[in-house]
Amino acid sequence: MGTLHAIAPPDGARKDNASDADMQFRHTRSLAAKQRGDTRSAIIWCGTELLTERGFQITGIDEILSIVGVPKGSFYYYFKSKREFGVAVVDNYVQFYAQKMALLFDNPERTPLQRLQDFVDDGKVGMTKYDFRRGCLIGNMGQELAALNDEFRERLEQVMQTWEARVTTLFALARDTGEIAQSHDPESLSQFFWIGWEGAILRSKLTRSVAPLDRFAQIFFSKVLRH
Image (cartoon, rainbow, N blue to C red; front, side, top):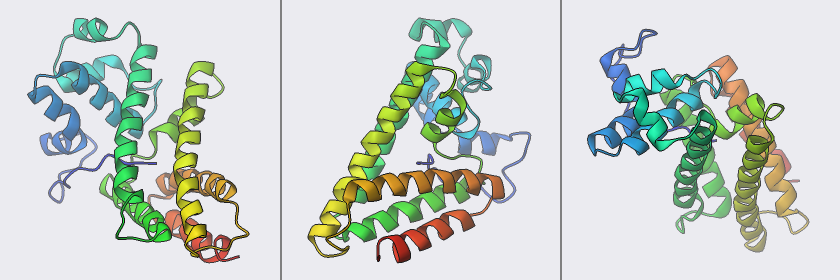
């Protein structure tokens, strides 16, 4: 899971009927791309921001184009269909998340388990910053589309396997350096972590609280890894 971080707006700026401040806050990356003259990136980033909050089917193309400020013809100039656009959004999110993981998981100043804790803490910051409206785009789309579209299901599963491989490497390093017992299987630990983390993200959105994230992390670090 990776929420799209931005500078928090002033108190009272977030309202159900989005104010200008709220719009700037929620669509930082798409508006920045528009200012650079990169219309395609602006559309993709706006889609990423909205799909992370809502979902694929409920998000309309017209709303995205209205936020970005471009005519409908611009969308079909860059994308043949909403499906193709959805694939581009997933690819964009994956690239964004890969950069986030590199910053957190490749930090030589932190031990492997400290890096994973940093990831958890970063997720909590992101959830809080967006009032628990955003979660994991991959998890959101997986729940929404897995039974409806095999192309998306296979692509989303591929992403999850990539993330699992990333954390498997982290647990292997933790085992090699003595942070966790030699008896632990890094791959199984990683799979368990992601299953639990994605579930905690969903519950956090439902409760509008970081408590599910804290509970999962506390049990995972203190019980699962110390067994």
